[in-house]
Length: 241
Image (cartoon, rainbow, N blue to C red; front, side, top):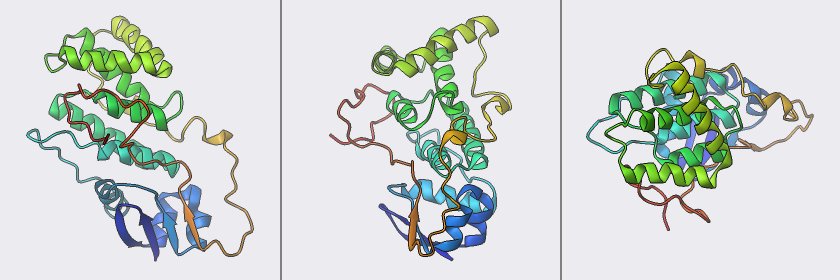
């Protein structure tokens, strides 16, 4: 067994063989340690992660009467940190289904968090930018003027999102109005992250006593920021001043 440590959860024992099987990139670290730090992963995100490990699927059925739960985005970002493409694919499928069922577009502050923690060309970036473009060009009734201001403000602050949004608008014009939350979603799947091959791999180092390890890249959803997105999303903001 290995104890998964995180800031917002009590230590959680997990079977090492499951972690080694599903998160192959860190197999050597898992085999040699008794603890593994997952930073500030939220309790709901950890619940999704454990369900995926033991059940091979997510039990995620969003309630239309409650605000959107961004833990599924956190799960995707955790999958990126752990370099687990299967987890990312499961998470992005669940995210697409939730957006389709709830008839929503990701809020500006959720998209900002995605852009902070993913690389250029990320399928999640592509999906989010296409959802926004589709909502704007089809005059989605759920997309009010204040929400549009939020997306435009994000485009002003984030050059990558601005470029992706322009490409998404062009894609929508060329291919017709197609809701990116519909369909099989295979184009948003990946076998591995485009930049992972460029990251130095030190998993075979010969250290004999790594008492604990940690996921290198995952950051919890920001609850305070030097320039937090304004609270004009249709969802209640989850950061704190």
